[in-house]
Image (cartoon, rainbow, N blue to C red):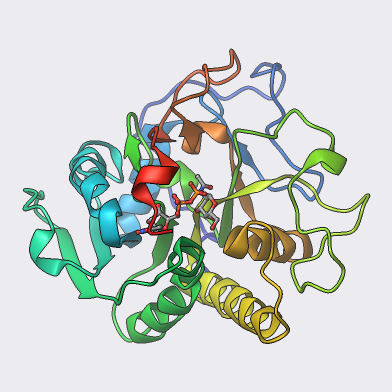
Length: 296
Ligand code: UD2
C-alpha cells in the first residue's frame, strides 16, 4: 500500500487556519523536487497525529549497540519513550553483542523492545557499515508482520523533543548538521570514481546523515540492499568509501530523491552550538571520545 496518498482528517478537529502567504521565511521548506523539508513551525502535530492515528500505524526503529556503544543505549531508549512517536505503536529493535546488558526500560502500552544478537567486529567501520545488511534482512522478515514505517538510528544519541508523524514518508533522509550551509563541493562525499559511492563534482543535493534515515519498508529495503551491495562490491576491489555506508546512502539519495527531508533539528550534534534557524533540537548525537570508545 502507499500510505501517503490519502490523508483522511478527523471531522471536528480544531487547529489554526493554515496560510499560504505567511510562514517560515528563514528556512527553505521544500526541495526542488517538491519534497517537504520538515522544520518546526511548518506542520501541525495535532492534525498529523489524528490522520495517522486513524490508520493505526506501527513504526519500527533499529539501533545498534555493539561493544562499548552499549553504554549509550539506556539514554537512547528512555528518551525515545518520552519523544519518539508517543501515543503510537512502536517496535524498537536493538542489535547488540551483549543481550544481557540491555537496560530494562519501562515502555508504554503498545510499545515493544526486541533484542537481537549480532557479532562484534574488529573494525568500527565494519560495525557501522554492516548495519545495512542487518536492516535489509530485518525488513525481509518484517514484511510478514504489520510494521508500516521504519527509522534506522545511531545509538550514541538522545531525543530531546518530539519526533513524530511529521517525519513519515516513503523515503526519508535527514540533513547532516555539519554541512548544510556549505557549497556542495565541500560535502564529504566519496570522491574517487572507482567507488560505487562516488558523487562527481557539481552533483549532489544535500549531505545527509548516516545516523538517521527511514521510510516505508519497501523503500528502506531497497536502500539497504543497494548500499550493502555497493559497499561489498567496493570491498572486493579493496575500496572503502570515505564515510562507509553514509557515503553509499548519500549516493543513493542523490539518485533516488527522498520524498521527505528532515531538517537538522532531527539530528543535531551536542558539540555544536545551536544555530538560530534550529528552533528545536529533537534528536542529537552525544559527545563521545572516539579513541576511547572505538575498538580500533
Ligand atoms: C557517522 C554517522 C554514522 C555512520 C558513520 C560512518 C551520523 C550522526 N553518524 O558517525 O551513522 O554513517 O559516520 O560509518 O550521521 N556502532 C556500535 N559499536 C561500535 C561502532 C559503531 O554499536 O563500536 C554503531 C552505533 O550504533 C553507532 C553507529 O554504529 O551509533 C555509527 O558509528 P559511530 O557513531 O561511531 O559513527 P560516527 O560518529 O563516525
